[in-house]
Image 1 (cartoon, rainbow, N blue to C red):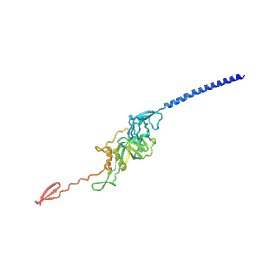
Image 2 (tube, rainbow, N blue to C red):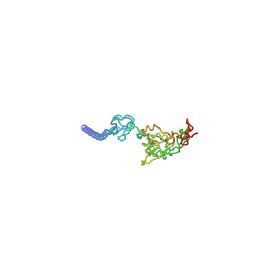
Image 3 (cartoon, rainbow, N blue to C red):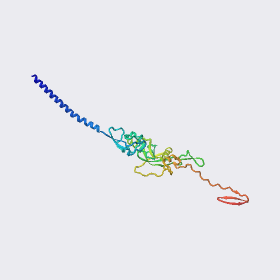
Image 4 (cartoon, rainbow, N blue to C red):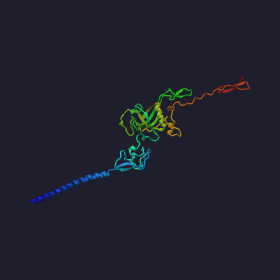
Length: 305
């Protein structure tokens, strides 16, 4: 009887061991496939990043051939995936070979929007002279200047009295088809107002170098009006008082030469004194005869006495 009980217990233990083995195999077969794909996904996750194919110099626009796309496991903050986003931009510091080109390493803002030969100039505006604050960055405007006649001061005239630099009240076109870089806080890159009208105090314009002095003088001595242009209007004024030119001088030299208020307003500046009428010749008495020379009008004659 005891022998049979021992056999039963041994058989039960064998069955339990088999069941535990089967259970362990089932658990193992279920967990292995779920771990393996995660490991494979972690090994295969790559990100495209634009890197320098050759060293990039600070202050020089980036050419397309200096960039390439490289796959990396970790995506750096501010990295680019497409070289088109980087071509033409200017690094603020040297970028070494194979280094990722990051947004923080590139110049940004209005400076990137200025073309060679242009300067960014801020002018004061309000809703009365800036199309009711409806201008937006990227628009084109004509700049008009308004002068009021001022007789309180001026340049010396021929007779020594003071004459006005602005001889008459006038309004004229100063600059034609000037691009708006920023209007208030809005730039071509961002517009925090979402296009809504707000109170704006300054507008930043892209002005040719040789015309910056004319704009600065006009704003200081008169009042400016910005007239919004249609983007389809290609007409540009070929001659304005700000577009003066001198042969053989570059725009920076012209700007350094300066512009006077009288020139800007087309007033009298450094006028030459009027030519005086020739003085009548005094009668001349000739020695050795009894006559004198008399000049009447433009005719000379001798009169005996």
